[in-house]
Amino acid sequence: MLFLDKHEIQERICALDVEAVWSKIDALLPPDKLTCRADVSELVMTALEKFIAQFPGEIAIDLVEDWINAPLEGGYNFRGIVDAAGWHRVDGRVSRFVIDFKTSSGALDWRWRSKLNMSMQPRLYMSAMDADRAYIVGLTTREDFSGNNIEILTYSKSDTLNEDVRRYLSQTIKLYEAVANDEVFPQNRPTACIGASKCHFYEQCLSGTMPRKAPERIEHWSATSLQMFHECPERWRRIKCGEQPEPTQNMIVGSAAHLGIATCLRQIWELPEPETDLPLLTSISEEATQ
Ligand code: SF4
Image 1: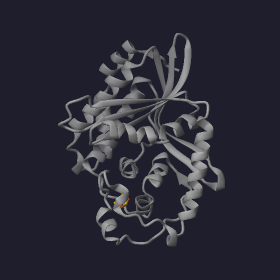
Image 2 (image 1 turned 60 degrees about the vertical axis):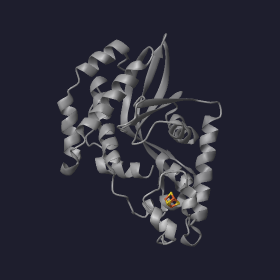
Image 3 (image 1 turned 180 degrees about the vertical axis):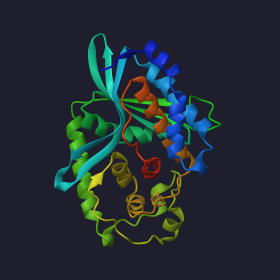
Image 4 (image 1 turned 90 degrees about the vertical axis):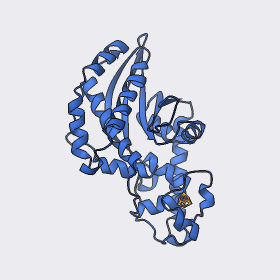
């Protein structure tokens, strides 16, 4: 395990092979989407310099963009991608943490914080990874934002974490099985999203013309998918039926930034490159469900 202190991390950030990072992103981004290099570069450097380098003590990152799997009751499976996980070492004490990077086109304000604080996502990852802490690192691409372009939320393991997560998963599966039949699937109206940004399906919801089609049985659930199901089952259903919205520029920038951060973390902590990267457009479509 390679533990590095703040000074060593900073030195390694300065020595990064940036061209290797860009060649990975260029290879995965469609040619007509290569206009966002500056945005991606800024997000990657912000994430590295303002977040990674601020840890107290030393840190070792040992897992970058990797799958976690956990069986759920009823033959279902929890499957998610962990952006990064590692270990803190402070005064000889070592503890596990997980990191989830989130890019946003909006302000990282109280609405953003409230949504994430209500989310089970960091708790799911802490439980699945047996971690003591989870960090959500928000990065905004909003140009007119005069505040920080990074916001860090920290979550600590509670005594009831594993039981809370078990109940959440079990109850969600029960809800899903109750609505999985097309005839009873909730036909939401936009009152469900008043005050929030309109989603891609707004006009059809407004006119009540959503096509009625149930997705195939969903066996694998990610943290994002679980959250979406709770937020709006109608939107979840449409996306699971294959109605992916066109990726927005923000989604493309966000996904490219994830890949850039992952590549940099592997360089800094001398981790092997994966045989195949996650397809960028797959991660974009996953973001579309957020
Ligand atoms: S699918 Fe849900 S979030 Fe989207 S417009 Fe309809 S009610 Fe609102």
